Image (cartoon, rainbow, N blue to C red; front, side, top):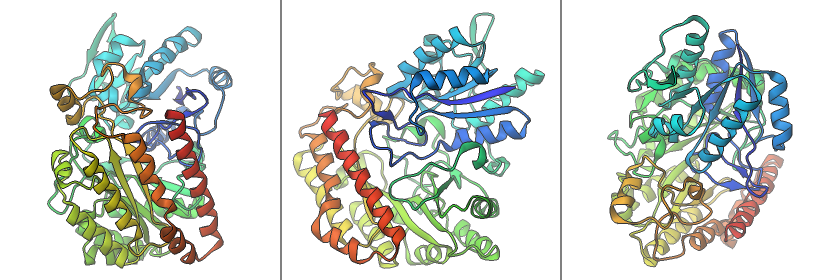
Length: 489
């Protein structure tokens, strides 16, 4: 079949949606941070290996006009199209699918965290032919294609139409053996995906799926839609050998300089896995030859883990602080305290690792004093042994439908918007009632990057022309975030 995987450029006043691999959605005018959609990338690779003619059509990263985008798609004449969606843009995707059906004779598959939470809704409100209601939608889409081609029985978790009725194959079942995944075909996907804080060319992997949590294997935050809608709060890892082999291909064939592991908490929570990964990388001569970065939890950063990561070649760890209030961390089921997070980040920095701190504003139970604590803790950790590469991210809290926080907001009458108006979940304004201005505090936290001491320490620790290039990209990204904030206000 001819299969197109679509990311239509459905902009908002000239700003493009951060869809793809982003767990937090917004419209932005800055082109500096657009990571690839990794699960759909596996989908495209799988289908190509199965002999299908696959068209990766990302109009967002390529900043295409919608008319031009659709014309290119129609010229491809797809038999099947795949669209990944998310709450703030799902209504527009429903409309896009309906219009698509008027222009081409193709089956449509809809995937993503929102439709995994409420699959029946999208089957009723759009003309999608199929829907995969789990995060393993690469395997689900392959199953749909084999069903269409050969009449094979579809796997669990697929919704479809039969004689004008909506049916499904039963509750989704997650794939146990992730080594069944192919290595992403970057020639097909394109190597121009990136984020401002990573060295380019940047490659992306997922060492597994689902948050492994801290040393006790716990931690599933109440605001995290991926854990609750896609992965069913279940952590799975690929084998260290499989990951090391993929990194070998990515460096030798595509020359990626830095590779980011976008598994929710990385694989660094599993020390046994990390030790074996070190051996596999050493055997391939890769230790220290490619920079690795990863999502992480700070309560993993003991001396042994930090030393292993250094030997392997890890550079930066993306760590969720979320709030400076222990009460907030408890209420969102973070399973960490501020003291643990601070100690872990400082220990990682003591070992020479760079840290990207992520924070949130807009928790409905917080006071101005609480968000001041978030600012203070974030600033302290950013300034602690600051070196070039340390950075932060701040977001306004969005309780996507399907998260425990979403249901809690209903129970406590916290919504500041109509919770059924999905367009308002785009982070352009607070979703929940709050006693302080979360937009202003979000902007203030971003500006810690401009703290004179942080700027000075970052500058004097630069060591190469590449550092200077990343610094300018980061500055453009920061300006872009500031422009987005002004736009929203």
